[in-house]
Image 1 (cartoon, one colour):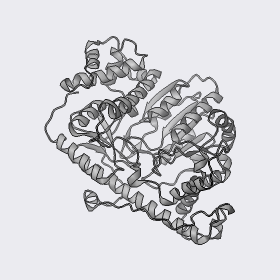
Image 2: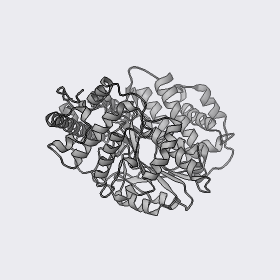
Image 3: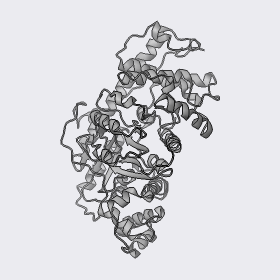
Image 4: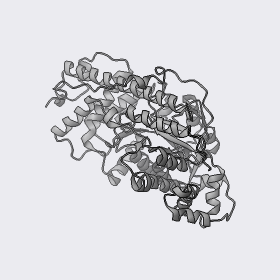
Length: 524
């Protein structure tokens, strides 16, 4: 049975002229953005100060939501929650450090995250007329997988490749990923033993955190989680060991690692850092990352969540990312528009991966074997692309096993198709992101993202991001994502995802702009 035996259609990623009009073509981004600091403000402290039991995450969640309803007056979604807030009183004084070091804080935000999706957006407040710009993922129908990768899934199905497999993944796919990651980092020299295929980024972080913490034994210092961050990732660490949140300021597309450097101690077991932040799209400068890795104590491991590090400057990655105490997480969810496939990989020291094999075998068996061909083809073609290869030959054909039945001509046609689709998709998403930022900047303070598909916005008149979400949804029918859900503990910043249909983006921003200019006064 031959892979790519039939000519593949080419997916068209085109934008209407009006989508390009608000912005110039993608270009290197320059300064001018406001300072973004996701620190703890007085509104956050007020919730802790009023709680009967500040160790109860559900009480904190309900107080936060109750205040939103109390401030919404006749528009309260749940009046009984508003009554609970009004009946509360200040019982103590709380410091920002106590909030950042509290186990309860992480669970509180995770429960607020759950409530947002389950009870509000897709629960009591749901409407088919809403324009959803809060999802955080690419619209698969508009910007989904390249046809070459879809063909790999069809091929695996035809060959009935969905049985048991190695707990770290099929060797050929791991070898392909290792070669790709080696091409990205000078001198890394990764081999298959450095790679474990996983069931997506969230499972990778959760399982790695559990494995690392269980093997490190008791520590006197907490794990450090940089914020902004994704609640399920932070909760997966906080439920296993003491954890401290470390807010990182960002400006002009660059996150500062200084707070992490300050918080490190000789007994820190683990650091979690998103190399490109959600929701701001700010990245960690490579020189700063080198400083951070070099400062790590010998027994401290750092988890680098690299899943949002795309659609940005093509910086050459430093050899520091291949250090023995660095664990890198990659996923198909964002970069390749496939969050539902739940596939990705971990790149780490080979001794750690060898130990992790037993953990994977015990806890979940292994990744989905059905997607190994997809991962192998993706990794090989990505390596060819970044190394400048244009014409495949017998050497590239020999990278695949004989059972694929590949020929030079068929492989070349597939590679051309992949490269063309990938470039068109990336260019289109960059233009959409720039156009979204330009339009939003006409009436709000929008942080220009340097990576990924999200834009963080502060609308005039709000100092509570969840209240902002509720008001905008009610008045405009546009769903935004509250910054509080990613541990942005101050201000009214919300996130909009630009990787949608242009017609939806255009309609949503027009509604938001009209509402912002209506003169309605909000009181936080």
